[in-house]
Length: 74
Image: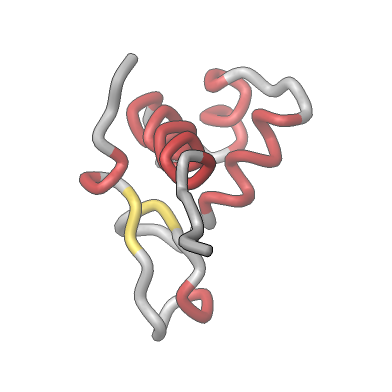
């Protein structure tokens, strides 16, 4: 499922010290990615955080994918 993460993930200095988070929540992207990294399914994550959707979880993966493609100019 291809998701545009920009619709779901925000970063503002006044919430969670600017950490990327799910828009409208205080749930950081890093928390969702941590759950996925340990093998949790989207359904299991949603059972833990009922306000989340599968689209928001997919947006976290798309965000991580885009960050991994970031190139540093040397």
